[in-house]
Amino acid sequence: MDVNPVTNKIYVANAYIGRVSIIDGATGHVTTIGVGRFPTSIAVNPATNKIYVANSDPCGGIAVIDGRTEEVTRIKAGIELATIAVNTATNQIYAYDPESVTVIDGATNKPTVLLLPIPPKMPRYTISSTCRWSTPD
Amino acid sequence: MLNYLLMYNFMTGVHDSATAKWPPVAPLLAFLQGMCPASWAQIAVNPGTNKIFAGNETLPYVNGIDGATHELTSIEIGGTPGPIVVNPVTNKIYVGFLATIRGNSTVVVIDGATNQVTKVAVPASPYALAVNTVTNKVYVADYYGGKVTAIDGFTNQTVTVQVGLNPVSVAVNPETNMTYLGNWNSAEATIIDGATNATTKVPISGKSEGHSIAVNTVTNKIYIGSYAQSKRVSVVDGLTNQMTAIQTGRVCFWYGRKPRHEQNLRRERLHR
Image (cartoon, helix red, strand yellow):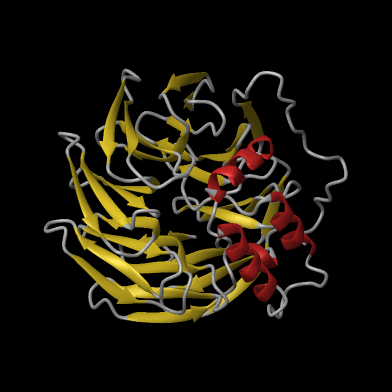
């Protein structure tokens, strides 16, 4: 859950239905929007009015919601993402999963994966080729 | 016991959602895999220094990432990192040792300039952290002990307040110096006055609420996300402490999903 104090909108990840509820802080009116499987963490960049959603499904990736048009762009990145954070100063977004940090450039939505150290002899997980990314579930 | 509790809620909760598809593949898979991530932040950003700090759930490190060069520095902290917050004003990073058992634990303070590590003993098991950048206080929510510890950022001295319930999420409104806690399996949220450390309980919608919490400092409204059957977000007016409920959807199981290779270890810990 995160708040955009500029637009007074609150974004709530509803993990079980794969949607984000958008609450209008002024009226209390709620709309929902599909973002992919198992959204769990949300970070708002109030400067760009973009909302970043980390989906913790193995095929979840990151969903970017345009706060104005409520259009969703999905980014193929991360495996079972846990938390997401925004640097509003640089417009870079950081999504964490237990084995890597995915950096998203807020201007281009281009992901860069930074691998975190894991215990020796532990195989790294990779994104499954069977994941479908075309539409939000 | 906790796993049974989760199973109970899972069994009763899934099919009453009007919008959920049947069969509920994603929830089922997630359940088998050990559920959602924790409510704590395992990643934190310091926009001032353009440094990112990410936890490492199997190794006793915090990973410092340079935002410009993507260079990675592993900072040894001597325990498994759990929740992380940054105070960008003082350039200090606070990392709680992963909360798995009841009892005393440690919050590690990393100096952002030197990566030097200072350990602060807290009579609590840090489940979630929040920082008040105005007063330079860090609030440690202790789920297991039902306590909140405030760390003074200047002296690293601690004050612990018993809140009685089981806080799982914490957020600060630095403008009003109030700290808000969502409690597991409770229809109440806790408010701590930063000046006096006095606590107030406010009723929120339903039970098992408080999975996640966010503050709008502009409107002074506090939003508390629901995990429970009620599928509501409780909105607390920061001025009057009056609550209104908004129907949304169920958020998530409150308790953290571990990396696959650590799941068994985690389950063993929980069974104690």
